[in-house]
Length: 495
Ligand SMILES: C[S@@+](CC[C@H](N)C(=O)[O-])C[C@H]1O[C@@H](n2cnc3c(N)ncnc32)[C@H](O)[C@@H]1O
Image (cartoon, rainbow, N blue to C red; front, side, top):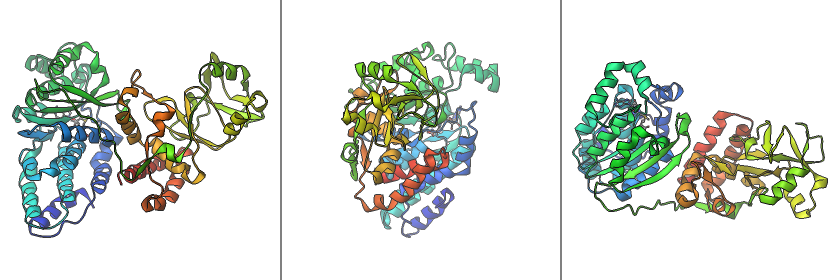
């Protein structure tokens, strides 16, 4: 399917025809591969802050919206880009009450091309949510055809928000564009006008400030789901917004470090109506069709505490060719996305180019056996649970975890660990363990509980050869293979 097929499909359904049976995953793939999305991804416009929201963040917000929102009079995203947040919200929330949600939708983006994609994307999402022909499906299709053009338009965010009643549900990832850049790209008069019109714009504010301020107005009696720079938790210019948020119940849904190459770390926040009851929302991370990683693989920690000192004293400098009888010593500094990086690392006060732990220096037989196995290495402290395949026997440094599953499951476990959604799932499962200066904390026990697609499932078995091939290419630095592998894992995980 193609995004441009949405309207024709809606018309056919409105005439009594059967829905084409599109999957949600197909709609999302069509958004991701649309030329406008590709153009925005390839050359993000810093002046417009066009960093589209990753699906796992969009889904996290949508899940919070689905369980926490009150009956709202209007909903939408005033900076909808190509529509990822709108589609995620539709999938888990809109589709449950389609006619009402279509009637009350109000969205827009200043980028007319992106708004047009979002409109088509939503048309396709509506089609995908219709499973069989009938009067209901025909009515919903007619409502979509009647509403989408006026509901998702090219316009300024503050104008979209002004058109929403005060009991709205807003999901948004607004542009975070500095005053300096606004000066350069839109002129001093624009910055001056923002300051004059929005009292919250103070100091070196960014463009997100007036938009979120007006979103707080629009959702005073409703619900706000916001992707914001993590720095907003402390910077002075965001103080007026923090003060307003403090008067409302709110919860941090997840945090991410520089997702999708964005320039900042983000925090995803959900906030209920002013004066409303505190959030009792807990993320649903039950994943039917998945099994805990600990059922498939051994997960262990690297060299903890006092052992690190002993290990450091035993290390010797080797070469890239591995000329010493021992194990290359790996710390998280050498673990890249999919492969080990050949680079100098600092360990216990010494910088090493190719640290090697000589076989003779390891007294315990159990440890020797462990080091003799090929391993998946996982940085102990990371923004994503990044794995790296190490085909050689390896010794592990501080802050490194290793997973050594049965051979045929290497690809499955490795690709699962590398999928961005895994970080979101891990954080949602273990919110108390998730943060240390914005980094994820890992532990053997917690990591063992991460859901992995169940390899006894027929579709997982059928996908394993492809996945293994993609993982092998990805470990050789093939970015396209890495992208394909993570997309395949997300599909398998979604069942
Ligand atoms: C961070 S992106 C988020 C896109 C989309 N919501 C998503 O989740 O993928 C910010 C969006 O704000 C749009 N934008 C920038 N300035 C705007 C303005 N003044 N009014 C409305 N939209 C604006 C950009 O075109 C961009 O699509």
